[in-house]
Length: 262
Picture 1: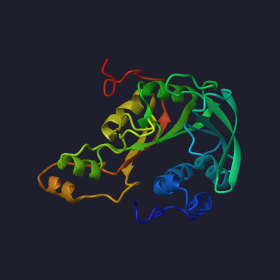
Picture 2: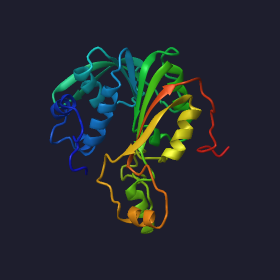
Picture 3: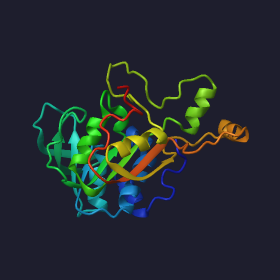
């Protein structure tokens, strides 16, 4: 875990997260640094208009209501037993909010929104869960994002200091590829490096900033320092990738070769 999840985070965001995350909430406590940094990235953009959160965490719309009350927030959800478009109540630690919700399989169903609806789209820790066709989702996100609108995307980094450490010890470098006893499909299916993600994001018609940070564990540079001393040029080794990209055009390449075999 990160020793100080709120390092460099504005006081407004710290207060909001502390009000939303209870001590018993293991998921959000384990992801506190990532949530804090994601909110800080959004907050620093000073967004106005509308934002779509893909695969809602519940925390983001609640936090944004407190931080940016004028921002209109929509979400997607995977509860396909309910009507495609409707309201959804998101709740955490005694706080609740009703948000507009699109219930679709984002990997093979179109989003129920008009073209160029949203000023911002947030896709946080979703891309790595796509099973067969991640570009379908990214193409849909392009379609519903306004020209010059922004995509904010985060995903684990397959080339972190810990991944390198694992590989040098003969261990698979994956972040979260394990199966589960209850046969849940909730796992990572593809984990990205910056090298790959840059090409994927550009293929989807976006371009902008991309960087890595350590959001899950303190970095382990022991072996990385040895490799650098041996002449290897290693960079972008944080365990999470952050992207803030502007929509430049429609989809450029529906099946980029960097992730598609044919």
